[in-house]
Every structure is written in C-alpha cells, then in structure tokens.
Image (tube, rainbow, N blue to C red; front, side):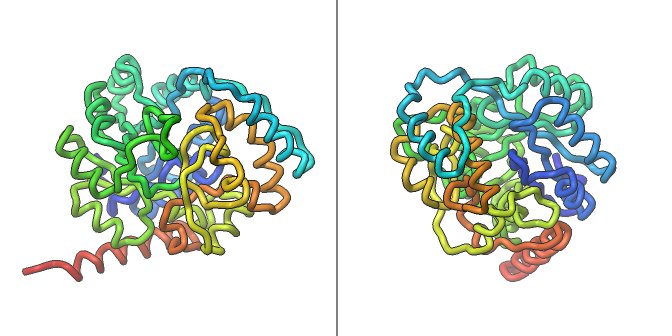
Length: 348
C-alpha cells in the first residue's frame, strides 16, 4: 500500500475547507498523495471535488468519510443560551443544534461508484457490508484509530490499513467513542507508542498521523514501521490550502499553546487556545454534530470579522514550526529533511 509513491507523505483530510483539490493534486504531482475531506459536504459537492482533483492530476488520491454516530441525548439548552450571547457579540444568531448523518450513505455510494482507490473512515468503523462493497470495486479501506483496542476492532471489520492518530494531532481526535467523562475523549497515546502497539495487535500497514511537520518527523515514523506519514498541520499554510484567513494569521503568530476542547463542535479536538476555547471548554457538552451546528454561524461570523478569539483554530502541537508557501515546496523541504535525518543516524 502506497508503494508507488516516490516519497510516502500524504495530505490529511482536513474537513471544513483546508484540504482542497488543488492542495491534494499539488502533493500528488510532487510525488506524494492525499485524501479529499468529505466531512460536512453533500455528495454532489464531494463529486465536484473528486472531478476537479482528477482534472488536476492523474495520480492516485483517496477520500475520507465521517461515520455518523447516534443522536445525542445530552441536554443542550444551557449551552445554547451561552451561544446566544456569543452570537450577539458577532451580530448573528446561533444555529440549530441538530443531528444529521453527514450525507454518509450517499457519499459511500459515490466513492464506490467512482472506484476511489483509498477510502478512509473517521469517527467510527464502516460496516462489514460497506467494506465488502469497497473491496468489490478494488478500493482499499483505511480506518482511523487512536488506541490499540480500536486498532484490533478495525482489523476485525476487514480494514486493509490503519491511520494511527497520536494525541499530537490537530483538529478532531479520530476516537471511535468520545467519552464525555474525559477531557481528552479517551486514551491518549503518543504517535510512536501507538505505532508500536497497533503493529503488535494487528500487523496491518500503518499510516502515521499526529504533529508531523518536519522531515525528521517523517523519517522517525517510517523507521518505526509506518508505510506512510499523513500530514495536516504541515500544509495548513500552503498556498493551495483553503484555510480561513483568520486561521492562517493565528497559525503564523505561533505564540499560543494548543489543547483539547469540545467547545466548538461537541467532539474532542485539538486547537489553539483562544478566548472561546478558554471560556466554554469546561461546560461544553459531548454532543456531535449538534454542537457543531449550534456554533457554526458564530464561528463563521468571527472568522469573517477577523476575530481569531471566536474561531476554531485547529492545529497540531507542532504548528509553530510549520511553514507557508507552495505545497510542492513544502513537500520538497520535508523530503530533503527526511533524507538528511536518515543520513545523520545511519550506522555502517
């Protein structure tokens, strides 16, 4: 898996805008690969992005799907009232705290019909029927996992590979179950430890994800047994990324720490600590996607106004050392750094 890549770096599926067809195509053309993010898109919008990516490159890329969970039974009235005050701050109204399935069935049908080479799943595992359908058209199935038990469960449903996500990763944790009793949502393994433990439990090919921004990071996970490295934060400031301008500026300032919060979406995610994060994390309910829809207009208005204090600033722990520029140049730098790192430690 991913044997054909000249250098096994993959653009992560950053939903909500950052991962664009242009970004994926640029990295594919440079010698890597990438995943289009299907999260928050309707099937027809995803189809357009697949078509656009195919216009830009003949290389191989994948698609990532969010697996829907059950509707929340958590009481949301109190948090909704807090969001009314946030909305007034930005001259807007909060959204409806509703559940939806993220158009998952239609998008699954689409990736089967389009015979996407690699289909990854986050927030849950695909059903055995879904795995069989994808295998029937030649697609490889990749499950996102965050701990050894999840890795074993993914192997049981027939996943061909695992995307192992360390706690260093930015944005939502790929937890199969977000435990409301834990601020981190569940067991928090560092990436290198998780690579070793997942390998011992399953023997499946592993794609490493979590705070990888330098070539030496990539060299480390490849030598630790990963078949590829999946990078998100490293490409957030790429010219081709669709990262919101206010978010870009906060990443460039690189003067704040990151942490876990449910305040923006109702699901545990790592982002830069700002006012919204600090004021609402303690009482944010574990209710995704209900909270995501509730806060979405507020976040959009904050971003449009240029106020980074009210915007979800997803970022991995190492975001201060990520760079900006064309995606191909970022890719080339990472490749050069990785090769240099291997040369430094090679022993005859």
